[in-house]
Length: 167
Length: 109
Length: 346
Image 1 (cartoon, chains in turn red, purple, brown):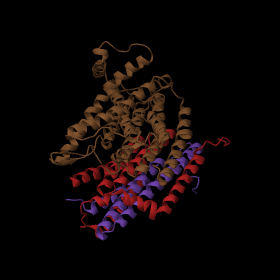
Image 2: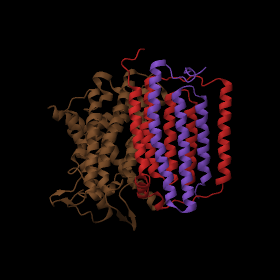
Image 3: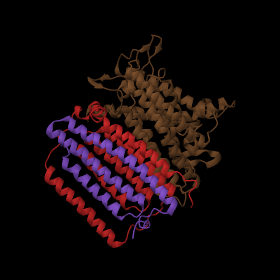
């Protein structure tokens, strides 16, 4: 059961990610990204992180990706056209495959054959996570809040139509 | 039967590779940015998998929680990054009428 | 097949059966209700009191020609109405409709998914609704649709903030995301007179929630995405036949789920003071579901009542209300509730 769910969503992650990267129409790419993110959320659940899964869907697909959609519609980035000329594409594909293989080899050497026992109730409890986030890691948590505030301010300043700008 | 940890890491590695490919071949800045999001998610996935594996081997719940908190931070920073990045694209588009990365060559010589 | 799986399937079937009734009944209530408010009769020919009008409407929908615009993106145009149903048909899973019961020696919680992430799951699934609107607007290849979709998505993500913060304030004194805990927290009474429902201490949060719920479901006075006088019909301008009906059903089911959520968060959910919730399991379940449905019906009628009473907002007014009134209000509410919780009052 668990293996079947994993295989299904792992395949979904990879296929939809390829569509994100290769599809010419930006709207399709973004919609495909939504599928990738939701599938990753399912993998989070399988790994015993239901809270992260919910946050992933809520924040990533519910907010960040909508922002992307907005900007795409606003700037009318229709039809990215041909992505790049031939040689560059081949080199890029080679680099990507090479890097992935490198990672795979590293992971294989270190983690191959390590089994994961089934999850227990205590593994997925929310209370310890809350204690960690608002106790041990209170300072980083607050700093992230500050960072978000700074980002909102910066984004507002950047995207605001400057009235006295000569165009 | 449960899924071994390596499988999750393999998915993460492949996803990171796909993201790299996207950054390298897409010309539109937004599309390159989308690919960066893919890479971030690959990293998140591997962090959660690492945390779970570490927690199982050491029997220490705190190790797992460290990983989860880290992922939360990454998601928050990704949100901040997306807001600023997209605002930058809008600003650039206003001036240059394009966000094609090949044509944004002011800094090139 | 294990007993748990069977129980889950049975609970899901029960919810589905109820949710699918919502649209026809609400269409009738809406038409007769609007007639009542406007001092006219409304549809009263088909069956007693026009009760079978919705049936006739359904037949009409099925028989109409399904038109896809020539220049439309066919794939997305077909996918969007189906996606519109996903949040409507998934969010109910975390809403409880009774205490745990014992069936044939097995303990069965009367909620489809008693996940610890509870409400968070509901909000996450509901936030996916925006994609169907954007898809519909984009794929129709029509300026009105596009404008409607952009407005809808801006409206949805703006009001989601206020809604989430209002929900958060409810969860804080409870200390859990689980809606069953929220219901348990609301049992008992204030001074032995009033039920201990959240609507009393958190009235501001309740107001914010209800207003945001109107915006989230695109109902008047916030139905800007489909403002007929400006945008023809907004994002579903180019939809006809069953595809249009799917958007319609999604909207009504979304209203129903939000009403159930509002009843659970603020009006004590399935619990009613005075009912004992004892006896055979099916009687307990029926009591719980009955109370929950009755409370949700209040909200649903309120939706209709407001729709035929208030004029539509302008888009800038809508945004101002969302960002400059509701969001600060919900943050203030959150801080006040946090202070009261720490002080041990709530």
